[in-house]
Length: 222
Image (cartoon, rainbow, N blue to C red):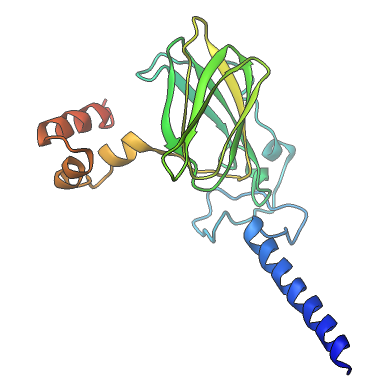
């Protein structure tokens, strides 16, 4: 084989290999079947849910985000998820949605989605939204009815209704189960608890302040 031909073959093979690596890291792998409706009761979990055989149309629908949710809570907001746990037919499809409602002054507090990018569409009202990069730069904006905004995967973000009327958004995710970690709850209401000396040093506050925050975020017992 001539040297020129060998170089061309090498470039082609290397390019194909590089492209395959890019595809692997870009997202979930391609599905190997038409569908895999989640068997939520199956104890076997292999990076997802096992498939069930007795599927129905009900496995692919959910009406829970049609109407506003109750926002009479501490934060003044409510997230109604439409993920694989509500729609078993989403299993292996790599998408999900949610509806978020906000009372006037309501906050969806700083949190992250470790497995998905989020894109919101404002149904009603106006919101102050933002996310923080790993360089500690805040990217923020006021969005109104009909606007969209994107929160990159894994970055801390928030939404706040500073308007005088209720607000609502539809959120879309490129994951069947994005996962949510509220920063405050994760740090101050973990079980077992994060040691006080870790939190006092990290936040440069005293033990009394840490204990006060923990008591306020602790799950309510009824």
